[in-house]
Image (cartoon, rainbow, N blue to C red; front, top):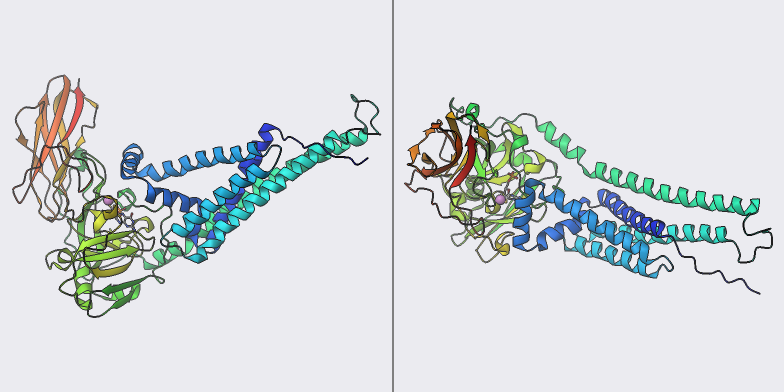
Length: 533
Ligand SMILES: Nc1nc2c(c(=O)[nH]1)N[C@H]1C(S)=C(S)[C@@H](COP(=O)(O)O)O[C@H]1N2
Ligand SMILES: [Mo]
């Protein structure tokens, strides 16, 4: 009589582990193949990026509010948790038959392929990585299942083992088979786990751009043709608790949609200027550097900065005035916006009149505080436009400028943000910090105010709703940068609320009315509650 083996039911823990390992191996393989082909095609990152692009606006704002600059780390961790649950589920579903697990892993794999294809900056060459993921995921799932079921079948032995003496005391041969099977399961799972870790780390290493770091380092310190005037003494009140006038590059706020920042060497970089122009331009980094370069302190602000928020920083940017490049291209009269595109597919639309204004030093910047741009701030070249929020004027890793009309909609415009958005006059209290306890008596209140391209004229402060009093201002640098303010108050013990409001050189005083960041920047007075004791 033919021996028909009973279907083996895999233990729950082992089944979940098989699922987890299959998906981990799939992601690791995809990450490695992506590093070797098109780095942005790593399925995990592609799914994350697609999630970012598809996320509804309120969810995005919530994520930024909850996690701040760590919003993307939070997303990656969240994705890892969801994927781990699905992977374990796939394992559990295939305890008796591989079918359901295979289906779930295949669906995940196809999602990866779709997400990669949906990335604007990834072509068909980006298909290798998600396809490798899909195949490795299925392969590992089937392989580990087979190893485990074979071992289990061997352990159980044929239903009526002629060699077995009694049911309780296994023959030496059978226990030998058993430990052999177990060893094979152990070796297989450990190999898959190690292989995945090695693949993922190698992929990470390969794609983390040693080449780009070298290209950056090779540029060394940068000296512009026209240096900025020295920053005057007294341009900040850092000793009283304000930020320093220039923000160190490592502390400069960072906002972008990239899960993995584009890595382009200065040698690879090109900028195309086209559309409604007389002459198309195609510039290399060397072309750019050989032009007239200037240096200019500029305070950048993100439209997502809530009242009192941290997304505002100042650097001395070095670059080529954008108006020079546009003049060389010869802009048509009807062109309304410069539609800029970055290497990662981000886009922004900046009004032509702002960029061609002889009075406004919008830059194609490659230097930041005397150093080449840090990679995460747009190396090798980015745009910086004084007075406009970054989302429509500060494209990092910029590779394309198209002169066009407003018909074409840029990244954040399609997501409900304003077409044009000058930075709003704002002030922020930095010290005391919220809910601080300070000694009663003389209390220093200090902070920062900005009104880019108009200039800060005055900052006023009031405590517990009493009269406004004018604060001392730091030495002005230029109207495109922030100013620090401070004042000393005499305060009795107890809880106090301090508020600040700035007035700019057009005479406009910051409005009390609270409005959200969407669609063109938050308004309202910053207020801080603290206790004197
Ligand atoms: N390629 C690219 N450029 C970008 C962005 C982006 O997401 N991708 N974000 C913009 C936004 S919203 C802001 S506020 C500034 C922030 O520049 P920073 O990160 O150097 O501070 O960059 C702008 N340039
Ligand atoms: Mo922004």
